[in-house]
Image (cartoon, rainbow, N blue to C red; front, top):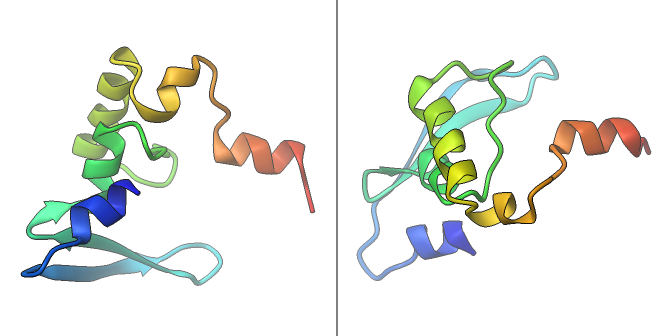
Length: 92
């Protein structure tokens, strides 16, 4: 819902930039809606996880502790489970 809120509107400029591939050859990119970085927007509101292992962007890394301190989004839970920990504990 947060991303829909960011990227909806009658006069919306949406841009995507390909930044590389991951180890599985999946395309990685950055999305902006009206010049707002979607990743940063979601992290600041506590609706996304940042993995410092794969992404070294300091702005994105700094957004997570702020959302945690304010108990926003998934941080309201108190002990949310990171997606990579969930996948490890629940293999297909």
